[in-house]
Image (cartoon, rainbow, N blue to C red):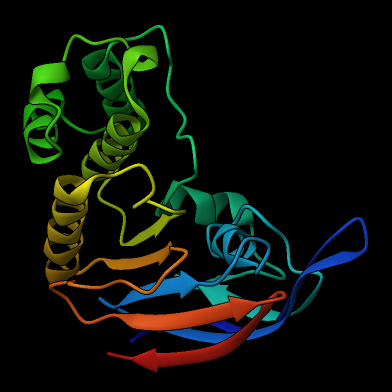
Length: 215
């Protein structure tokens, strides 16, 4: 089933095109990796899919929401989005950040230990978020998504700042959530290698898709 469809999608900023006529279909349970240099349009495309950017021209639907005529706030409630930094309270501990998130999402507090264990943060439970490394902050964002359980995960450069163990962890997590029915769209500077799941690589340059395939 197609969960996201873009037809000649254009996104602009102060009249400058960030995306220039993007056509894209994303199938359920797939992993789509956007690659390309800085300024290629990867983040703009992710933000469009997450309901954080508006279409200037073209058509699009994500999880059944019309990107032109629909309420993008509703879409944002359905999508799991992690940007470069993540949205955390720096003066709260790792656990308290997740407690706050769980209560806001209506998720049981009892799910937090499992999310901490799955993301390798069990030993950082009482660490203030501001004391975490960049890689650990990314893991905290992923723990938040595990609590939220979205059907569509959108991750902006999730492999950045991760060492080899971190990359293996993220590959395993993506394999797990897609096997359970989720779809993952992420950006990376280079094509994924050594992944344990099928990947659709989409190359972007100048706000356009210049090449895509299915592996």
